[in-house]
Image 1 (tube, helix red, strand yellow):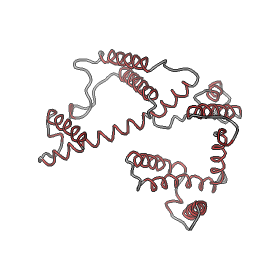
Image 2 (cartoon, helix red, strand yellow):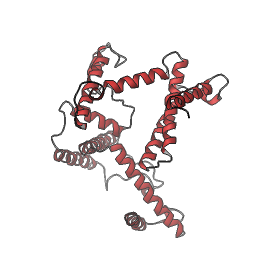
Image 3 (cartoon, one colour):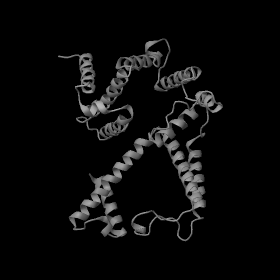
Image 4 (cartoon, helix red, strand yellow):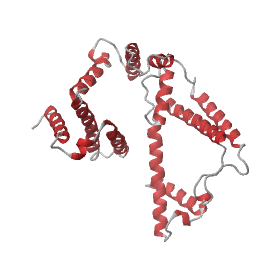
Length: 305
């Protein structure tokens, strides 16, 4: 029976074969940039399998994500930049260095102790990278030097915005820049809500309406650009506060919203099915009162199941 190492080496060799001159035309054409969307897609499929506790599907999704790592590493090896061995060495070194309470003499009795040690080690790593000038491309400018030494350096702006907000606020909290308690967060939420409502007063008549069914055929609402930008800013502030409420509750806001999305999808599709059974082709052919009644029924059905 093959060992784990032998299985891993086989996967690496298969990837090499696919990228070789006599390999797969599609795999050979791929680049770092062309593979990025697949990496994101596979990550979300993995998260969905975890949310669904789909243990039969999960090994396959993990394999698909591992394939992305092998793909990037093989392309880098071909360019003489690094190999899968460098990836594994970097990973092993990081795991050992960041767990001195396991591989060294540091004491950590609780998970909170571990987290504090972990964050302190990461801070030292960021300082080291900044000293080496590797944190930013433009190191010659004042902005570049400030970014390289910032407590926020290393947090990618390419990640989902909810996750980025969570990481930014968590990092700032490490140096004491935080709300004192969750009650103050709810006060901030109320403040941001009032500010948004105040800006909404600038819109004439009955206020803004969502694009879609309510204004079918009427086109995009004529909203002044400066007002639209202000709304966007205020809604962003609201979302940022909500992310921090999730952080205070030790919740992942991205996961929380994803589960709410799944719940909405499940209930809405239940409504569509009921309408179809009643001979109604689309929710668009129903009144809002009918839809609301079905929505409440969908919620009750979920609670009973």
